[in-house]
Image (tube, rainbow, N blue to C red; front, side, top):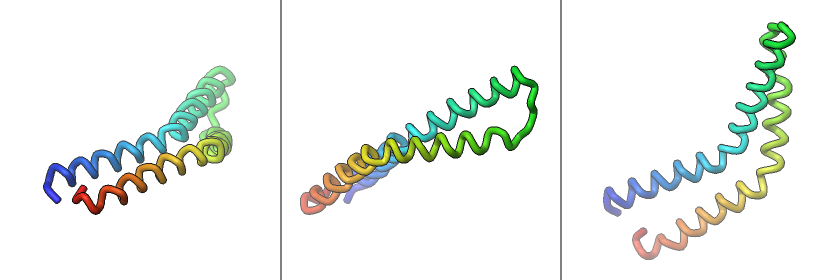
Length: 88
């Protein structure tokens, strides 16, 4: 395996990780922003107020996106394993 192949494998693994994690992170940012605006409008400055809704929203996002994420990971793994005999 050459250095270029190793770099390409690493790059594609990082990209797949980012793509799989993106929906949950986007939900976390959106819920956090909404809670921050709500706290600013109502002047409630409780720091723990944002944790529960954010955790619940992220859990729902994981449950919703899990079939898609698994299919992306399986497709990547299948392609990676299929390319082993050719020397990647």
